[in-house]
Image (cartoon, rainbow, N blue to C red):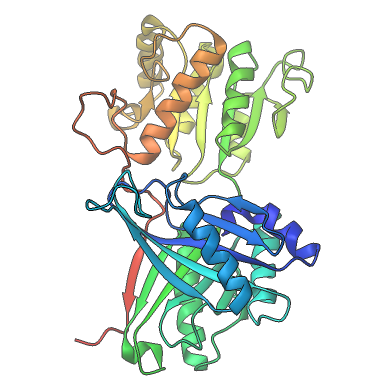
Length: 383
């Protein structure tokens, strides 16, 4: 649901009633992951997607039904060998979808509004919704902030709210979306519960060092992939808004000094395009010791060997050097800035998703790898 937060937040501000269908769990080669959503308002307008097209029509009808009767439902779709035209995932796999009405009088609406507003503003928050359990609790929601504050609840038992809030906070800390299983004893309502937790976290950072033409194409690619993109270069004549209109930030500073002073995390990607030793060596010496997702450096193979030698001279270890992706990018035969940006982005995505980077044609590798956001927890279970 939070993946279409901006549009849904506008609907809430406009006073529209709508129903939202959210992917809860997937199996096999289902195309979308938990948290993906499709919403339909009372005029029949639809936004988002839950399956890339396979079951959109059927889910659309479920949303319309939820708007009419006010009932939250959990529906499973899967591949049908017996009838190729049956409603199902023709590409294979199984997908569970939670359909929740969000109308003006529904108790879930103010909680959903809080979650949507936070996500639309790029703020951190997690929303937990009961997927399966007692009918009166299904679809209810609770929002948790990083400071531990919460809004909403399930109305069954205060201890259940506290338990879910703590677990949702852990999901939020990890930036994860997934399901949480609570056993009969832990639920405090006499039956096991399944809860979907969706996390909204600020966009991950891409920092591009070196204000060259290749950087301009990479900035556009980074924005397309959902990164908050910063361009950093020590030369003010090159690091300008005119040259990089799509960048979120442009910083004129020596690269290593900027990296020392800015915030990074385990989702941050660092792309070093300067291929100049006076910039690269102090920058990479620092970058390879930071807990970031990706460090790549541009340059020929000769430049790469020379740079590695210089890095060893300043104390960079072999283990630290093994983190460096250089020459940067996958082997696509790229020449133009745009092709090179695609090569770099492909390597970043492959590293993030666990892909091999080889052609799928003739390969025996899975098309969809296990997502980093997938998480399933179990608490309070009864043996």
